[in-house]
Image (tube, rainbow, N blue to C red; front, side, top):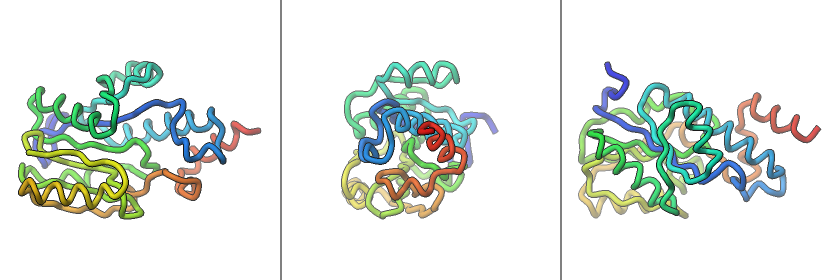
Length: 206
């Protein structure tokens, strides 16, 4: 099996990352700017470890993110300015390189260890969606690069993505996996951080 393939065909991963510094503004009352930047970097590193050898592109215009990716030999393209546009740019990036599917993964999934649960179809008419643990947002979208698809991130994106799939006559496969659904939005979500990350953030205040 080549590094560009899985049981679901030719797959490329897309990681939209706005920036390290200034991330997680909703946590500003419980974490300092430095802690939030460190958290964003640690979370991205964890997602990249889970992605493994699948080809990956980061979508970001942040210079610190570009430098981080360059050290790790991860491709980066510029962020067009919104999460929807970033996800679409990543999908087009892989379409132009012959990939059959693009897997858009949020970079704030503290418990992720593998993408295997969402690499289950090569059917171009099926979209795989992972809802967040609140059944509101969408943490992962696996969609064919050739599909007539639009992204609809934002409030209630899980429902919005299902509706868009129906309008485009695409089937939806929903994967509910705690390791892929748990994201970081508010202070109470910090309880799901791995021990090592939580300890490192705590040490920054000492």
